[in-house]
Length: 379
Ligand code: UD1
Image (cartoon, rainbow, N blue to C red; front, side):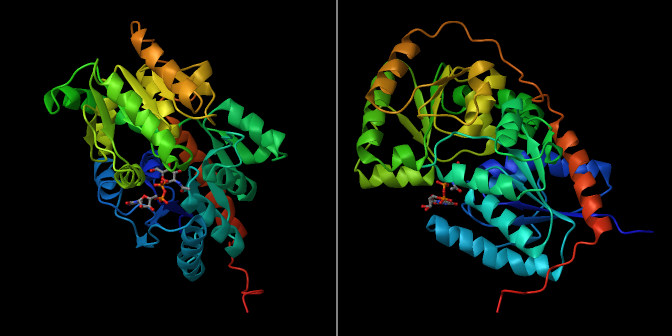
């Protein structure tokens, strides 16, 4: 009997976990591949990591690299240093990297240097903003990867436009929405806003991007507007550690805005599903609100997820004072809930399609006999 092909997944941060979980589950159900899970430890807080593993039924990682926080260079370098010996000691047939965080790019780079095929899950998204660390990670990862699994057709176009051959691109849809569909009813039943916080018709806020929260004047301006909004309706703001740090160093204290700890997957989904509106700079939240039919206001100059605007509930506000005026006015005019939208491939089955494509890649890797290249150039 020939051994099953082997896939190694690398995850590192909160938004990776819900993208990868449906793929791991679909591969387990198929049973035709062996899987290894590596957690880089880019996110290490219990609230940003361990609770997600529990709720999403992810297996415990086989390897935890413990890279932690640091500059982009430090984080990237630590992933490479810690992952390379693992890949060399026991090379899998393919490495799977999700999303656009530093761990994603670092793992893709490590794998190609060791001669292992790479699959990128959530490929082809482009904001066009070269200031964004995620944009660097997307571009590098896509150009290194052998298999590019995309969530939307515009991503396919972006990749082709950059000269990536069509045969490497596979549209599979949005695996993060598989997770949402799986947990949506439980999240609605939880009804956290009403049952635990005693509020209704709330505005949910998530902000963590350096472009906004590292600019203390901009962050303060947002908080002032949120305090005004909170005179009319509840404002719930679960704080990412980066944002918490910035608010603390700015000496800001909430008056009416309800600050929350980072929430688990299920609890955050519950707060989203029952929100009157969401204000965010997150990528995933733009997608989740689209399928939940919740009006989403994105406090960014651009988005790499245009389908959430053209087909969904998302509205791009831009950054700066005018954006906040628009947001304030739009909240005053909130009509009946928009219909929930299901962009193509956001159907709860993307994990299965991704799994089928990954088995193909790993089988090719296995039959080609992935061999770690010599350490030429190492010394
Ligand atoms: C990272 C991703 C971002 C993603 C976000 C989701 C990159 C370049 N950025 O940003 O794309 O949207 O995750 O949350 O990879 N910290 C903790 N505990 C943790 C992790 C971080 O307190 O477990 C704090 C530290 O102060 C750290 C800061 O958050 O310095 C930033 O963490 P980092 O991993 O560098 O980036 P994120 O802002 O989380």
